[in-house]
Length: 166
Ligand SMILES: [Zn+2]
Image (cartoon, rainbow, N blue to C red; front, top):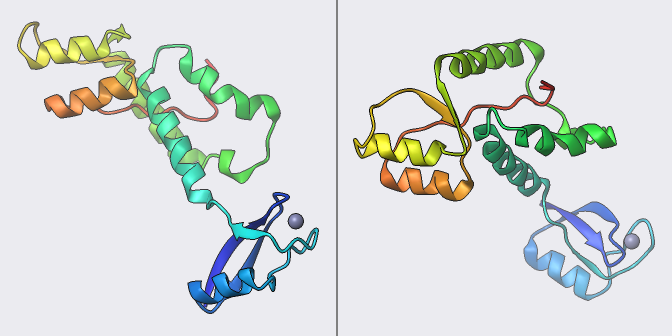
């Protein structure tokens, strides 16, 4: 048996068990699967939640690298502004872990040179020996990050905590 997350043509989400994929296809084609909300038999498989989580993580990685820029606050604003109780917007870590991560991040910020959006530039110059190596932090676009990885430049995104406000 497999469980599918389904939606009807009116966008109602529900779940149902099927013996296998073929059984699902057959029952849907035969109009045997009904939306429990509106009774529609136009049913399709829903996009699964993990994809949403992955998108969110990508967004946070991007935001995370802009450690000293206002961008992370903007990135986090929607969830805070709507006061959403959606579980996908909730921090997954408990307070102790958050404190640990915050302390580590604070340490990184205090012991490295802020270079803002010149991060990729500076990192690349150091990598090529054009300027002296020093610890830095700043912002990079996903494209920059990809380029740095391709160039073999080591870097690491700083975590942004959902309850950071300053
Ligand atoms: Zn429906």
